[in-house]
Length: 133
Length: 133
DNA sequence: AATGTAATGTTATATCATAACGTTTTCAAA
DNA sequence: TTTGAAAACGTTATGATATAACATTACATT
View 1: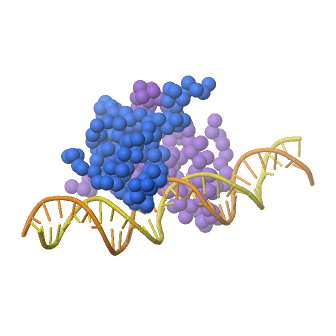
View 2: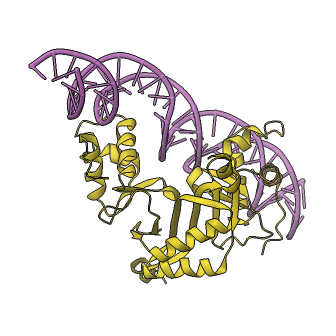
């Protein structure tokens, strides 16, 4: 899987996300692509959907924003977890096989066969913690 | 904390959530309270915000919906995790101290001091898994 | 060239959420 | 018991996020 060639809009959207450290909203991506000819939300949302399918980007559900995947070939079905700084918006993507296993067990214990998990930890990163006193 | 007496709108909103098994959107709650005299979204959103502060309800970020807390006095600052069936919308609330610890460690390892975490596991519950094949 | 499929462009609208402002209620301190 | 500050409320408007629906274009395969 996943030697898929990206379409023009998909490439444009991915390039915008890859050029930012922080998560972006769909409309903010759209704003940055008006010069490239994009005019309407569906053009961005369609690209985002495919890129998520391909595992190239992730949606942060708790802040309705999107980030480029920080790993090569993050499989689309893997559990991905995020550490999000509420001050500077820095996002770290966490991959941890043991944690995946734990999550899976938790689901099974709750009577659920897991398909996809959202794990988003909010707080303050070390840099921002240091700035407050 | 938390022997707070609820206001009229807070009580109305909580009653609607408690009378449902499944998560509800804010607008769906509003629809069910028109007879009680509620007219506008802020009336519901303001109540939801307070109820979340009090730990009486939770927001499911991945589906923009709200559920009554399944535990007595879920502290507002605790980690709460959810197992959500994508077929029947059944939601189980998971509380597990060891898992909280694991999440906390994960955050620390990522250089983040955690304040609040969103954990929402999607999949199929046992009942719905049995129906398909 | 004809055809079928995926991608695109476009308009409109659905859905989720909050700003802003004026009024009413609550309730403890004077 | 008054009264004044804070909280809750009602209301209008609007902002922010996301998708339905349909016409058009691009392009690989025949």
